[in-house]
Length: 118
Length: 114
Image 1 (cartoon, rainbow over the protein chains, first blue to last red):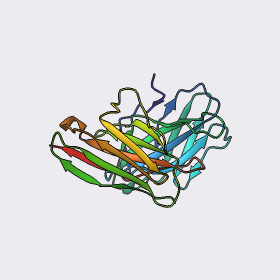
Image 2: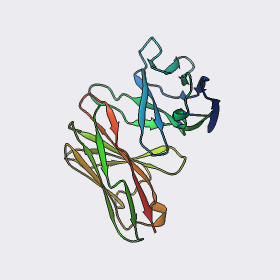
Image 3: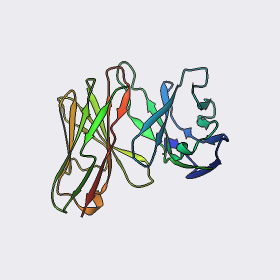
Image 4: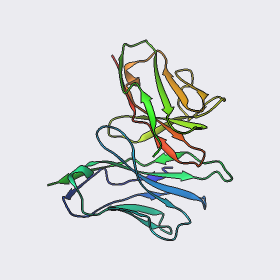
């Protein structure tokens, strides 16, 4: 079963507008972390934002915010005031914690290609 | 932030040859490194988890004899694609985990097998 699902293969947004990229996840663990990465055409993975399962507040990092709906198991990324440089592929990822001091591996969603129009 | 390098960034090789890709953590010790493979416009698929001084743990469906992983030191892991074929052409990305559990990605290596 897919652990991380991104249902939007592609999204388009006008420059300066906000856009929401969807992500749902599936886990039976209580302790887990959710990540969003940006991958421009160069291929590098750029970390954007992190949300821990026990965090009560939605994470924010500059123009990025994570809309964390724990009961719905969703972790949507909101990008405000889109810029042309935001055009890239975006990945949602989850890490399930193995407990103690060990850390689980990252599992990625299928990705969403965001195109920002001038 | 922490830096992870990969070498080479691009490589073209002939079918049947072997290619080695290096992943280095430049300013921290990485007890665990991960190797991913990514086809165009697709997700990152974990190939294997590499722990320093021990054998790598491969994901289901990944041939360990074809993708040799060595994690000889706390700052270096290598992936060797043996007897490469055109279907092995892909983007290979490593990531390194620091002792705090933070994971940092390398810039990736684009492999083309002709």
